[in-house]
Length: 105
Image (spheres, rainbow, N blue to C red):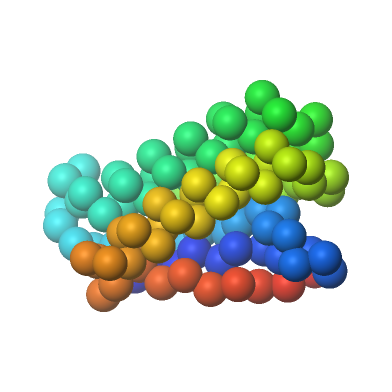
């Protein structure tokens, strides 16, 4: 199961995400659910890099995470597209992906 946590600040804005786990939909290298989550996440990170100066990104093979400290209109749209992509995956692959909201600590 891939666990996607959207990080929410005290103004209820998405300011990051954390992704852990593996879908185990198919064997390693052929898992389309893992591939879909990965491309959504990297597209989000690369887009944020164009519109925010405070992107903190890590990917250590256990967890992928991104955080920003100064959300703006552009970052709101980027995170919304990421959320929409994950929600779309949930439509057909909810046994392999879980989406939660988490207060940023």
